[in-house]
Each structure stands twice: as structure tokens, then as C-alpha cells.
Amino acid sequence: MHFIITAILAATLYPFYNWMVAFLFVGAILVDSDHVLWYWFKHKQFSPTKTFKYCTDIEKYSDIKEYKGAIMIFHTWDALLISFIIALFSNIFLMIFIGLAVHLICDFLYSYKLFKGFNFQYLFKKSSIKFLWKKYILTTKQ
Ligand SMILES: [Zn+2]
Image (tube, rainbow, N blue to C red; front, side, top):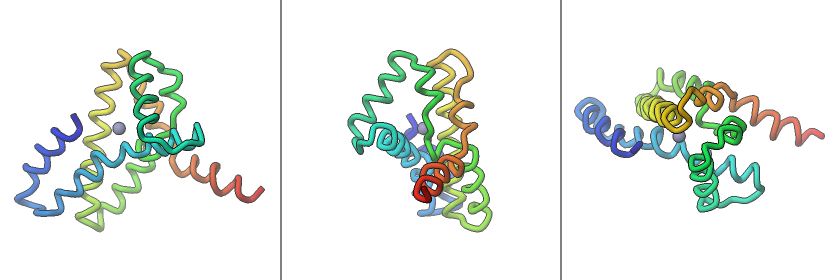
């Protein structure tokens, strides 16, 4: 799903940005690697296959509570803001930012369809900086 939309976008932008459109895929597809990071953090286990099952279970059982509690560090307002700021200075990051923005729109529409309501904002409202700060800076000091 993300791949098809991004491929169309890449083909459209290719005349203007050449090989840089490859970075659209970084923003649009690699961002979902944060699901693995979240699973790793939560279950103390690095496992892409278990993460996949965890995600499909949330979808299968419409587990809104689990969905709202998850912190996907690339699916947050500050990750989007940071990539936007860097995008002002770099065309490569501009591609990553566009890819990410399109990805988030797709996720939003998908979650709306899945949960029959607005729930994506719970994921998006969180702050990656706050989460990482609490997780790594504050805990290592103790
Ligand atoms: Zn996503």
C-alpha cells in the first residue's frame, strides 16, 4: 500500500529530483521500522516477526487501547517537524519529509477505516523527544 503510492509519487517527482526520489522510500517505508523498536522496548525482545504479529493482532482485534498506548518514534508530531526543518536545507531530506508526510496520511486513513473513528491522533500527539529523553537520559542518570 505504502509502496504503491510512494512509487507513483517517485515517478511523478523523478523529472525534478532525479535519483533523490529514492529517499521518498526512506520516509515512506523505513519509518515503520519504529514498530520493531517499540516492540523491542515493550517486550525486551528484538523480533521483526513478533512485531508483525503484534501489529496484525492489534488490527485483527481492533485493539484501540494498545494502539493508543504505543509510541512509534517516527509517527509523531516532532519527528515530522524535525524532518521538515532539515528538509528546508536538504533536498534529500525534502524527499524523506514528503515520503513521511504521505505515509502518515495513509496511516491516518487506514486507522480511520480500521477503528471506524479518529484514533491516529493518539499516536501522532506523542513526542519522540520526550519519550527518548525519559527512556534514555533520565533512566541512565539514576
Ligand atoms: Zn506507519
